[in-house]
Amino acid sequence: MGINKIQEVIGIILLIGTVLSASLVLIGGSTLLIKNGNDTMSRAKMYKRPYTVTIKKLWRDATSFNTLGIIEIGILMLVLTQLLRVTLLTFYYISERDCWFTTFTIYIILMLSASLMWHQ
Amino acid sequence: MVSIVTIGLIWEIYAIEGPLTVLTFSVLLFFFAILAGLLGALTGLGGGIVVIPVLVLLFHINLHYAMGAALISVIATSSGATAAYLREGYTNLRAGLFLETSAVTGAILGAYLISYIPVKVIAVIFSLVLFFSAYLTIKQKEEAEPEKTSHPWSLALKLDGTYPDHHLLKHYRLQHVPIALFTMGFAGLLSGLLGIGSGSVKVLVMDQFLKLPYKVATTTSNFMIGITAAASAGVYLNHGYINPAVTFPVMIGVIIGSFSGARLLTKMHNRTLRIIFSLVICLIGVQMLYKVFFGVLG
Image 1 (cartoon, rainbow over the protein chains, first blue to last red):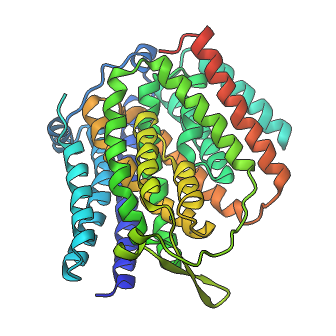
Image 2: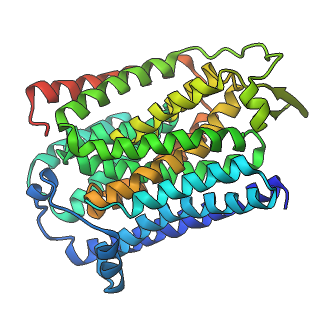
């Protein structure tokens, strides 16, 4: 597979991933507005920052079809699309036996994964 | 038409001060996010750097939440742009990935540092970046003469490339690779620390140090931004900087604004407009500084 083909595939992945993510965010957000649209905005919540989410909590929220959870999954999907795109490039560089760029892309994957698994 | 929009804007700004429903709040956020995305695309700075001051100054949203929402918007808009540009053949994938190793390192470090740096200090750094970005907007871009030799690292890693120019493929050779790598880490640090894409810094590094042709620099920068921002996003998520209720209208608004702005940009190459936009960015920077020293930021 030539680099041009890979670039095409990455482009498609990025597009699908972004559209999917935006759709999830939109669905979750619309549900939020339908359910809680008439509630008064809690200013305190916007000033201070008690909101914490870990990836584990995110999965729990999403599977319980919690509205915020759907938005969170959409957000996570956006990040995972980036991971997927770099992973694809890693496979490409492995197939090309390009040691340096295999190393570079693996390093990027490790950093992206470390950031997702970061604990306080 | 302009007067209607102005009256509408003023009414909305006042509306923000009173009690709001979740719906009104989200709609207002969405509307201003579109404007921010539009301004970001027209100045070439990206939605992130414009939307954060709007959220903080106008909506009084916690700076961390604003940064989180902006960061996610940046990933989304850059992904869309990259998908469009990759096919055109300007993006230098190898150079981008090589520099990205440094950028993601900086990004994670920057995101990590947020919890150790006071909000006021972050706001000041942000204002300085705004001023610098405003300067970059009006800086004249000159196409330099193509270089005759490549930096040894560029030869070793095969970073040199070609780009299409009037049905021809023009060659370019990279220079000063090590310093570009180092400075890119700094761009990543800013991205992680402030929740922006740092596109303007990346383009600056590629243009000034690597001597990449301008179109190659901008498309490669776009390619990189999504990955850099994604690197900080994980840290942001785990530290609770990303509030879905804030992120939802902002992300969708900035996407729409950036997309519209990008389309408008092809029709607007007016230098006067760039100067006006630059002044607006400066004004926002001044407002941020004012809030830091006299207001209730942080």
